[in-house]
Image 1 (cartoon, one colour):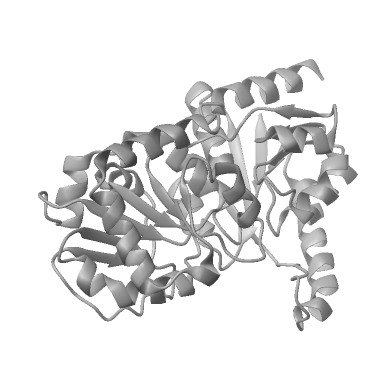
Image 2 (cartoon, rainbow, N blue to C red):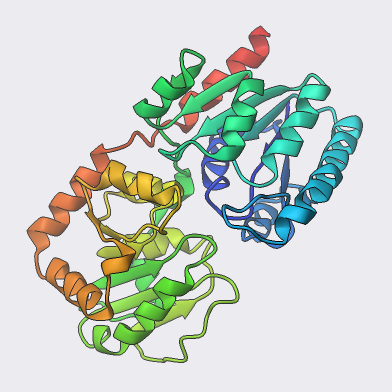
Length: 352
């Protein structure tokens, strides 16, 4: 069987697909996989590290604000659609799998033209624009939240959101050795998703000199966004983590992050306490509402460096609350569903 996964631009639509890929490949060594993504997104290096053939597609998007991209988007979409049709013409693909992202629409439209089966997964609590367009074309439609099943209707199947098995295999000892941090101090992990977050980086820059006096800090800035200029033995800063992310999680006592559903899924699976600061006017705000009873959610407009610093230390000093937050987040979402999705897709393919 040959599957074309499509997703990129950010790691959001990539991680659930990788979770399914890992589970499927473990079960079926003959599985063939291709990936359609973006040329400059963070996904390219991750996918190629898995030895998956990667095809870069033009990005055709319509931002919520007026920009010159609106003029170029139709031309980019036609170019992406043409490239997708050529891919289907020369590759005998059995299934296209998408969890949203910039490349999904032209690839799925081409799949429909060629009669290829389509799976669309909706992970964010707010339905993505790309999934609103592609869900009617899907042969299999799955969702992470009950609210989305109600919105999509009987066609949708509620499953939760799959987590990569590799994320669950981290080691605290290996993390200490890898990041060269102080084993006597708690560790705070800060990141803004696969693409990073400039606002969060600037906030951390202001507090990290004080924070490292009492904690270790692992700070993932995003590619091209490492401008901290600060060095300390208790501070590890990098632009991106892939294979070492599991060890970073294992070492971490508290996470400060945005509220992408991929991030929420991994933290839920690992029962990691978190401070979520969703990106304003984005789907992350609805994601944050889904977990606000099980985590600490802050509004970006209210957050100051002093507030974040005090909030981090207050939580780290309250071990009982940290444990409670982690346990609550663990129960908010089903994450052990990769094998269930493989069953769904492989069985339906055989039956069709």
